Structure formats: structure tokens, C-alpha cells
Length: 148
Image: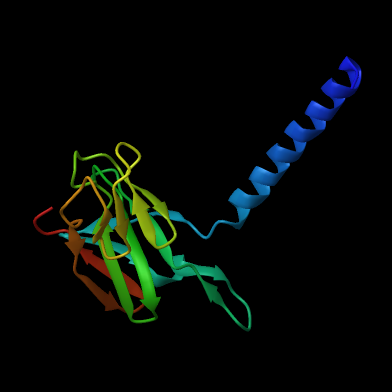
């Protein structure tokens, strides 16, 4: 292969990779929302889980909820219309902020891994994540932040 062909080929590969990555990130079901704090509850709408509104609406499995007053975001997993689970996205090993990958949370520092309920799947972490009680009230999720 000649130099000119090699450079042209590399350009196409780089362009293709860039387009492919942007398409994949656009397909991700992850969503980050900002919650509202009222008293000791973090409040979000259940509509935040709606991925596509149509005759057959589709829902995200989880969302990440952030707020300026919280040091770490909260991962909220949706089982059904009336069953949700929320955990703090802080690794119990050394306190790094976790990253959400579908039904798993992973620590970028030491690769500890947790399931959607915050239970340890892989160490070095050996404690589950902090879970929060949730009350559903008129399509609002009220995540209790007491004892955070």
C-alpha cells in the first residue's frame, strides 16, 4: 500500500469510528435528570423513565438523578410502573463515583461492580451501596434522603 492510500484508508477508518460511536451513544437508554429536593425527599417524575411515547410506550430501565446539594448522584432502577429501587452512586470501597451500565454500576477506580440493587458483584468493595426508600405519589417518585 502506498503512503497516499494508507492516509486515505486511515481517514475513512477514523471517520467511520467517530460516526459509529456517536450512533451507539445515541442509542443508550441512560438518562440523567435533575431532581427537586422538598423537605428530606428528592422528587422526580415517573415520566423521566419514558423513552418513547407511542401506542406501545417504551421505558428506560434506569435513570441517574442529580442535584447540586448531593455529592453523588442516585441511580434509580425501574422494575415496573409501581416498583423502583434507588442507590447512591458512591463506591463503598474508597468513595469514587460509580458509572452506570444498564443494570450494573461500576467503579472506575478499582473495578468494583454492583447490581441494580447495590449488591456487590465483584470487589474489592465488600459492602452494598446505600439504598433509599421510595414512595410513589401521583406519578412522582419521592426518594427519602434521611440519613445520607
